[in-house]
Image (cartoon, rainbow, N blue to C red; front, side, top):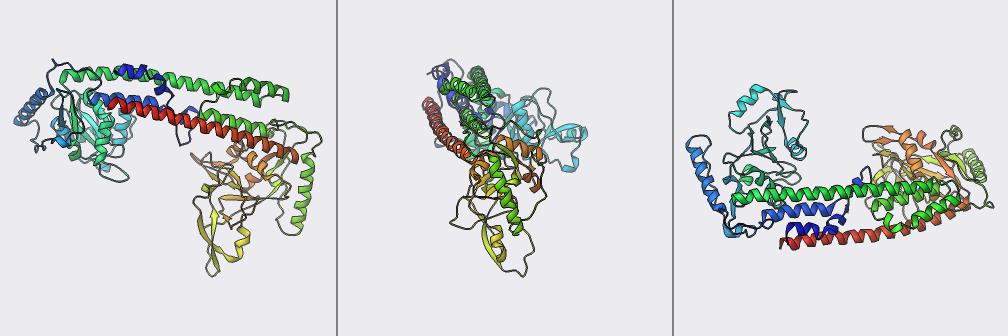
Length: 593
């Protein structure tokens, strides 16, 4: 099967094999990897280095003749004193060859195609703010990916001149290779490039023998190259590519004329991949905008009739709209928004209004203060009209978080506990409190005074709220519902205990995790570049939309049933995605076999 057929006959496989990233990112499409197209690019390069991309021409001069000319040219340069004589590299044994090459190709060690070296040591004291650019591995990676780099380090012109006398300064068609971190990333030196580079961090392939640098560059971008250099790369956490290892890597060398054909064909096919990628991204973006616009009609519905009409319109196209994990997540967020706005279930005029529950909570709170069970707090002002993000249905009420709970701090580490009887207790950290659930996979312990055990205990129906972290962490809320063992909370996790059992804490949990509270925490929190945090005062003032007790139960029943439905849909989608990924892998393996 030709390379064109691989693309055109399996277009659906390449474009539909998507992979959702595990890391959070801004924007829906930013969470999706075009795995199939990425795999196709990898396949094209792998077919190229194995001699399976372009048919061989038996009239082409074999690579063995090219190697003879390279050896002769190298000997002449040594004789003229232009390069140093190298210790001969060991011959390649048959069992060393990674795979069989077509007739006319040859395996050759990279060190026999040029000179591999590094730079002279440049000390930090010699770094300047202007002059000749000085590149580390990170700058080479940026150059390779973007064609340009905004670097921050330089050396003086005089030092560059002295260092260049070593003969290892970059010249046109030399290839730079990263030696640490993300190793083996190539950059072909352009005609007008003037720079120096950090020793060991970057290697240089001096292309004295005028090997086709574009062909080598394609080899250096292949999976074969990446696998080979990592087989024996030194280091555990940080890999390194040494000069001696780079010299020994085996390169599949095509006949000289065939190299030109290969480079041309690779670039042609990569251009087709670019088109596929752009079409896929455009389609994903259009899909995301369509889903966002249609879901907005639900939250913007003015009454139950309009909401029903808008939902009917969406449900007619459900199978075509909710085809990605991002779209299903957006649907879940919309359902949550409808829940907290009181639009998810019809109101019942016979329900006791939330104002009556708030009166009882206020009375109970006064009694608890009188008995000394909770501390009296300075009253907070009612939620003003300017603060209210939307109008509530009849029977609902806006209130402050502290109006309905008693907020308590947790254990502070590092206190002086000398002379006190201590006990070791498990406690909840920020990492344990997720949105709507608790992650108890890793629980740490801490020593606290024995007489403070009750003070820090987390009890059933306590709301746990994270103090800070990144933008997605601050204000995360979950309910504790296990009485079978003791648990405390750290001071970076607030504990909010309901004043009355009548309060539906599950309702408060979902409201605190909704976009309404998240926007509040974002605006109220203390912010740095990447982190945010809230204090007790800001948490006290967070506003809550409180429905009638009976309605809150109906909302939660509906909300949970819909979440289960959407989670099932998401599971089916993930299964289908795995099938598509498997097909892309099978197709790739079949093409290489």
